[in-house]
Image (cartoon, rainbow, N blue to C red; front, side):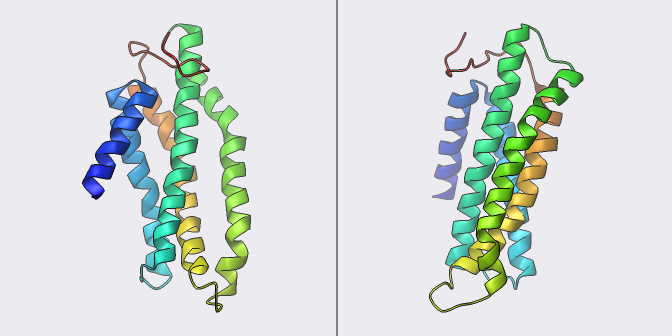
Length: 171
């Protein structure tokens, strides 16, 4: 089931980015973002609860949203300039995405902070492990989307592949 899900995610990413290379690289960053959740779960006692699994799914969703927005912003900028972006242009696009990425992480952190701090409370047993998994994943997800994805774009970005415009159609 996991392999089928990974293949499905890979194909959806390819459809989004119109690039096999970016689909593969981004799938690796998705997996990397989950390592923070796994480490947080291990530090909190090492027991995977149902809440921990829901936390992993939440981190996967947040990472996917932020990463897709980062890469499509880079592709759109590249398409507008009609040439391969230099490092300065990539850094500028990444700076534009800092506030939305940090606000997503901060809002999610603040929502789950009471559940992480409260411990095991009757009726809320699922929320503390979920909050812990989300906290760990938010750290790695934010770092990957702010630093690793732009660095990968410096190395592997290419104007030879079609870019997406603002409505998602090819140009």
